[in-house]
Length: 212
Length: 212
DNA sequence: CTCAGATCTTACCCTAGGGTAATTTACCGC
DNA sequence: GCGGTAAATTACCCTAGGGTAAGATCTGAG
Image (cartoon, rainbow over all chains, first blue to last red; front, side, top):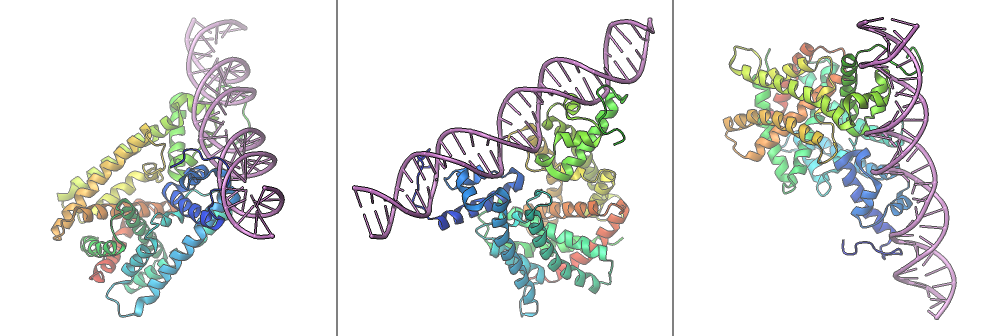
């Protein structure tokens, strides 16, 4: 920005700091554009640095992606677990809303991070693909436990129904996060409230007229 | 397949036929892997042909994509319009379910086509990006008219709510199509019935416990 | 002041993939 | 049989982008 093309040599930024900067930039780029469309040079440019430095600090593009994925996966997984574990607590909110609130809170400051988990297509048979599948699977498993309970309670026991409902829930969540990214001014709390409003209306829509 | 590497020269397949084959293959590839990750050579190989032929018949990769996008966009748009126009008819199904049924029916035989519309990221400032945005916008407008009505009926008039609900509906639809692709044996009718089941359960979930 | 080590860049290599030119083969009407 | 045309291929060019090697600049300790 300030200097168009700085000469070689150190800029006084310690390695750990630079790594944090690069990681943040890469997470945003991967989340926004996906794996393929993200270039290492673009990530580097974002923090005012050039490509080789990124490689020196993180290795290959895939390793850089993994370095982004790992913390994001852990944090989101933990947030969802916490929200679901609080099920019996004397909370006013339903489990789905608690989960969403947990996600919004955890994602605030780096909303694109959600899409790092779903940054398709990843190089096939790669460690990146395996780790991403791992985190997606773990999150899906949590969601599936919720949907399965729900369906059983309603007298449905088709496992395909449970699986489809899980897909639907994930799609809904993803869509809400995407909308949120388009509206940066919205706080996590405002989002949660909006979701509560929409749920009650949308639920009525779906329930009311679904029969036969 | 039969001949590992056929010599040059015609194979007796007329241009129009080959074009249909290539178009079908390309639609599937673009839908499955997205624009970037789809290679012209892979599309060509799928119909037992080589890259230059595809370029001769369709021009650039972007033009090939457009040739896929255009009919898909028109067909899906028409299907949704038809489903929404039938609103006042003496049908048992609700509008959302009718729309889904229309989509499933239209997509049967080429389910990945839905994702051609959302094959991000497209080359920026390209005709492809403009046309895709056009169809997405048209579909969103239809959805938005539905959600806006719905919210007004419920006493909510925040335009942001309507927009978010539209996002949610699109995400839901996309997720259901994705699940369907994972389960090729499911007929469009079976899908519609499944959605009806899930809607009544899911709706109850969302409505019941959303308050404050 | 000088040397050592950390930071950062320039210059380069290599492959994948979009795109084109020229050529080869098959078919069809005469 | 014999052009002429349509259908395909082989062989090539070119760029974008991942990745590396080597050198340049700064900073801090002694």
